[in-house]
Length: 511
Image (cartoon, rainbow, N blue to C red; front, top):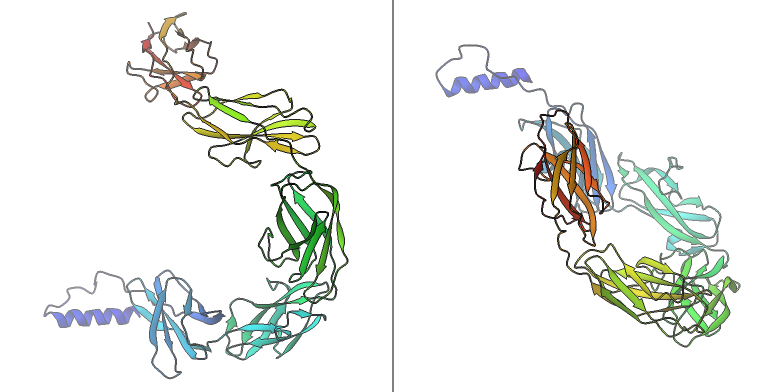
């Protein structure tokens, strides 16, 4: 190939001018021979096909050109290019046979020879269990296949990864024995066709094996053992099979329909667990009520009524408490509230919840849990300046009753930088340097930070930080120099708890 390329180049040069070459050295290397793609194979997708191939040497290959034809003896037409070893092709006509070949293109944009031609017919691949029945009462089911090309082999299993399946001769229809146990059964199949192509991903279908109806458990979930008006409770029936009808009933409620469709509080559709979100209405009071589940499956089987293991309690709560908030500084807000009536319920604790926007609930940040009924105030500290904070106080009883305040909010005061200090530097001996400063008395003090430099323009950016001192009353520090002739310059900054720093102190140097 290199020799042919050199000869063509010499002929072009010779024909383009009357001069001859002075030397056999043309000043470049002939290109490597472009490898031919091999192992070209077709994989059937839901909406087209995927071509895959290999190449013996990819170093000189820039990309691949894909060619196709819809007739075996027709001229191949360029379809597209690919930079990897695979190409997905869609928008093909169902029922039409297509022929494909692939050629490599090197970095000089020279295309090599095409691969071996492969072909396949485009169409849908699927499986159908028991002619699309929803239920079966037998573990032996028939499996029918829809395919674009006559299959040769098939893998079929209930495992989605086909890890336990082996290739077997194709039969239409086939027979498969489902695993024991009522519920949704999925079958997954992979086909290998007579023309050498395969289905790229497994096709699947499902059927419900249903020989009886039962309730594994009836239960409910709530945030409190004693519910109040407006509280949310979730009721569940675990029936182990979808598409049925589930209910619960208890004193004060004759029937509450549950769902298995992913709505109205049901978390996962068609998982065999029927559930319902229920908001407790006002003026409903239940003491140790029995919640009973009832279920009828899609095949018409009725399960035995099954009560929950736990009892439901709904109480009428005491009057709500009142809450007031006031910003005391840039980092503190003071809260005060009214006490719950001593005889209203068996007091357990006040809990304070906080948000930075309206909408405080028991899922918000809990900032305090106060167990004294007569403690009616709290200071929230270490806050950001100029920030809105919204609070709600909940009062809990020992038996699970809850009453709450309305939301109350306050905005912290805008923070200002700390006050600067005055610095003094002296010598303890020739090598030991004493550093002292005036005390900062700001309420939001966080630290003194001392910097040392070799020039009088030392700052926190140009100097070396020696230490950070968090004790507001400590106003001295000792430094050591290596040589008595060294001159050091010092400066101090004060930082508050919100990260603001003071202006720098005066700069002092060693004597």
